[in-house]
Amino acid sequence: MTALFYIAAAVAVLATVLVITRSNLVHALLYLVVSLFAVAVVFFTLGAPFVAALEVIVYAGAIMMLFVFAVMLLNVSADSPLRVPTSAWIGPLVLVAVLLAELIYGIGLSDHALRAVEVGPQQVGDALFGPYVLGVELASMLLLAALIGARHIASQPESPAIEDPRLSGEEPDAPADAEGAT
Amino acid sequence: MAAVSLDHGLILAAILFVIGFVGLLTRRNLIVVLACIEIMLNAAGLAFVVAGARWGRADGQVMFLFVLAMAAAEVAVGLALAIRFRQSLGRLDVDDADEMKG
Image (cartoon, rainbow over all chains, first blue to last red; front, side):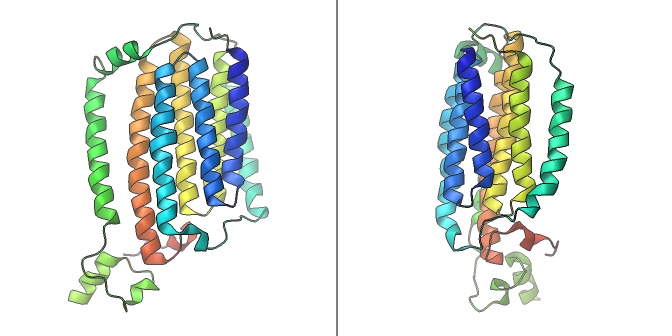
């Protein structure tokens, strides 16, 4: 299990680096799916099979499907080039490398071994609907709000004016309509 | 079953978080920026699960479930915003939206 952890960790890091460096958007998203699968293997080796399954189903399945559908809806390949100039990487890389070194130093190498027990779905369910039941209710409210909000934000405006200058300009639709009415 | 040390799990989470952060700072496409936020949230959830596995308790996995629900809500709203962004600005470059107007 230890070897599996390190192999999956290496795959996760490599795939995540490829996500942020690919210039083809669909390739980047598929590498992100690989990264999420690798993290699911990490969860499994840590004795958390329930969240490993959820990682595959919800993250790699549902959320990434949403991303791929958005890419298809938006026709991103017709956009400006996705490639980032090499000079743009230098500043963030240096600063974030310092941050990572501090994080690793802060975590420290104190060699606590992880507990060799598997926490299965039953224990997770007991905790979820026992002490954390209020959090479950809040999560359901959050998801409902996100559903309604996404429906409202992405819906077409009532009367789209084709010749409106906002198609080339900066004005969002609702204030432009309000100004037209006054 | 597991002889992985706590530190290695947390360091993996830190590395994944930092990679997502570098992507967030450098990439300018809105979809990639949202994907980088997903990477960072996933890394935070990984840290929760590692910490839960350290003490052999279910609380870390419960927190991961909450992170998962929040990530789903965030990506739904974010992609809806991306669609509106594309409709009003014509491109998906986040630098196009650097003016707070309207």
